[in-house]
Amino acid sequence: MNDSEEALFCNDAFYQAFLSRDISAMNNTWAKNAALLCIHPGGQALTGREDVITSWQNIIAHNTCPRIMHKVDQITLYEGMVLITCYEWDERQPDHFLLATNGFVREEGRYRMVFHQAGPTPIGPVETDTEVEKPVH
Amino acid sequence: MNDSEEALFCNDAFYQAFLSRDISAMNNTWAKNAALLCIHPGGQALTGREDVITSWQNIIAHNTCPRIMHKVDQITLYEGMVLITCYEWDERQPDHFLLATNGFVREEGRYRMVFHQAGPTPIGPVETDTEVEKPVH
Image 1 (cartoon, one colour):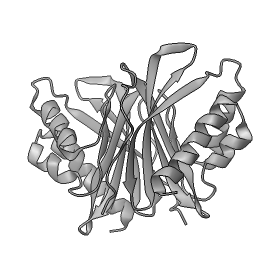
Image 2 (cartoon, chains in turn red, brown; image 1 turned 60 degrees about the horizontal axis):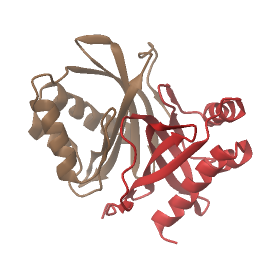
Image 3 (cartoon, chains in turn red, yellow; image 1 turned 45 degrees about the vertical axis):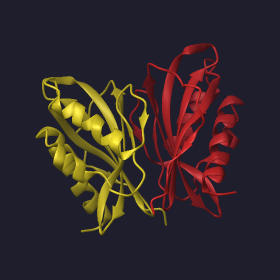
């Protein structure tokens, strides 16, 4: 797999963990040693690993946990980081969209998530192929 | 200067260019060769350099261009990338806040911006010192 495919693998694991409300799997998608940064819609910037994982635990454990669908939008490659933007929507509210950026770094041989920021966007995904932007060099 | 200080220098240049509505200075804060990713509040993900710079040109040139104040919130360091979160507000609407993440990579010896994502947040900055998270290793 190339860097895009490897980061997409972790991106998929993240959304699968969210959808199946599996906090252990969610925990595993986030990096163990790298700095983390997570901004939920309308939220503050969470940075400590415990705060980030606890925030996901609270979302997943809550009985109003949304069933988040996603569609990969853009993939941008940097030396040491992959950013993937995704449209997100609750299966039960399919006309309300978020646009999220997920960031991944390689740790112990595979990509893990280090960054997530999601905010509202009025328009959902258009039906085009995912575009992969050129790497930094 | 260390990585945090160098990235903060570019972060400050970005907001100074925004405030002074200087498109040439804004252009210079963004990387020339690296992939770019820019998500304005409620907007789609812009990736090509021309689209990103044109979007800023349109914002800056418009007669309703906000006078954006900012306060640095969190700095997270990765190998090859620095992410800086900032609270943003229009000087004329000081009770409406955005939380933005700005990403910087080193190019030709100095940090330039490659990522910007801003979204609404209900609460403004609290008066604490900026926290610098530990680097990836």
